[in-house]
Image (tube, rainbow, N blue to C red; front, side):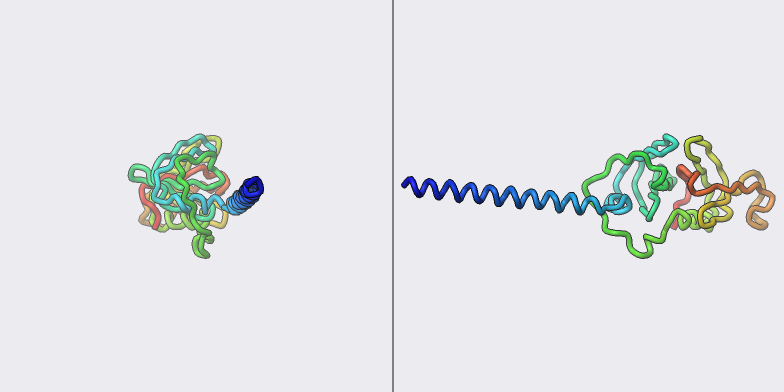
Length: 186
């Protein structure tokens, strides 16, 4: 009987050590997988969810996450859309556990310029919030380059050439904190 008890105890210890090793390996693999996640993937699993973000200019934006690009997110807020470049994000609140997959080839190419070109094409009025200065510029996006946009402001009808009779303000992408638009880009 003593031998049966001894073997049962040894078998139990072996099983516990094996389980502990397996749990440790699972935890390590999980940490390794999480280390490869990008912010775009993390946010991609949250599309359709209510979130809140705080930007570098200390703006708080609350609404439904509608789109995620390679370097930006879009939130629907009370009849308007707000685009926030990842570089401007300080804190994101309200994320669930879901994670999206890697961005597809097309999505990976949709940088901030793509969203701005869609707003320019639609002639959507925008409010551009600049970084730490918290400056707000309003107008319509006249031109979008590789790393800048030109915002038409001032008076002038839009019947003539784009930007005619309007002052054009050139804004580098790096200066943009967030952009509000009453028309979401398609």
